[in-house]
Image (cartoon, rainbow, N blue to C red; front, side, top):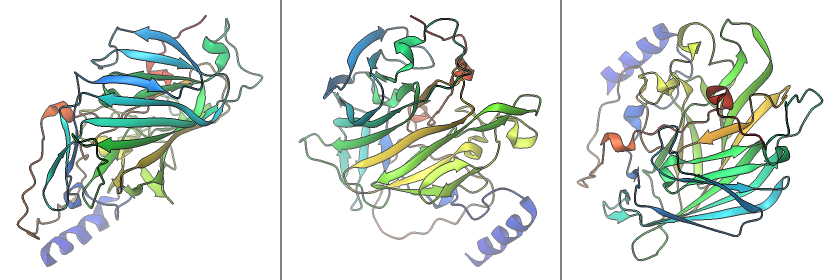
Length: 334
């Protein structure tokens, strides 16, 4: 361990990376697996809006059908509850090494806030749903969700085992929060008038951690990058922002989960919002921890419990928050 500390100190002194004191991937023991669920079924209740379109195209690397729900302005309480059943590839090992299959996830969307319009809004025709918030969900919870025309939404997940009992997380359940963009420069490095910052806040049953070497910092439980990390030189060129990039850690942070209910606030702060290309956000959760730079902490044997982790590529889904600049061809108008 002393040798590791010496190597770590030397690396910190010479590397010049951001968040050198952040947690490294070698320090994380992951006992939670949220796998792809191609046979999952979703039902919606407590809907504070109306049903919209159904999309069977399975676009953007998803494998499931998506469903649209429309709202008339901000929703201060529950917007909808999505219940996912028929799950087979998700599980959690508790602190005693006992495996709990996750057979149901109840996901509550609440406190949906409408993105305010400004005078520079310049749609060529009326925007979809008159610019009021939309939520899209999928059959498979691993495919995440979209929120449109909204500055943020709170998502609360509860997990249940095969007997229908709530699963309570102990010491080794983590979520990776990736693709947290801060964009205030264009591709040529020039300042943008229309900038945005993507954030995820721990509200209940979660504690935020910054990753070693990441541009994303922990601000009292809120993960976001303080400065531009999307356009520029070095790692700020945005090439880290793909699920298979070895530098995905650069736009990532971690949430350590606890208890039987987890609430996260997904939001995007817009400066100079004009409605032209910053109106939809895609969020996906992941239980795969991004590999961080620097020396790895030596593994210590602390107990005789054996954890069996699923490391198949099926779970390689980074949490993505993608503003519509990535999908400018995907604009819907009434």
